[in-house]
Amino acid sequence: MDWLRRLGAFLLNVVMAIFGTAVITSPFAFFLRPYTIQAVLLKGYVTSAVVAALIGFFVYRRWGSSSAKWVGVVGVCWFAFRLLTLLGGGVSGMGSEMSGMGCVNGVRNLACMNWLVFTLPTLRLISYSLGAWICFWSGSRGDSALETALIGDLGRGARSLSAVQSSRDSSTPSN
Image (cartoon, rainbow, N blue to C red; front, side, top):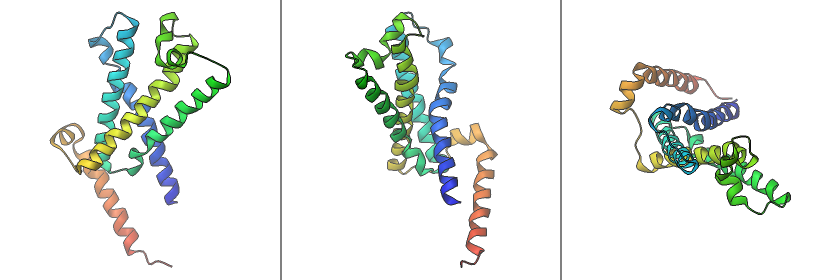
């Protein structure tokens, strides 16, 4: 059953990296209103990378989930999958195909969809992993004042639940 818990944690980290980043970056649309496609893409790249890295950092800092460090592998595989399918079709301009510049022709353009479905999630997954790795390398774990202010007792309850579980596991005789 341990493998099932690890798989669940890994999938939860993937969802947090992709969709959590989207939810947190969406309010920035009101503050940053770009007027050119290049500015829209730059805003998408920068906000996604920064927010995903921060989420990965704080998730690892709070829960110490080692799977948070490895979700970037899913992003690389996802992006490579699309690149391989584009190579099979003989597409010559893969840079414009995956960079988002095709959004000039509308969101329903295939090149824009490639950016939205493949490039942006890959960026978020890799940035999330980098944030977790930075937290791991810095050795910072536990609560910060910001986390305590935002999350409060919620985190303390999760830690006490895990302490009860670990004490129950250690008191159970092994076969």
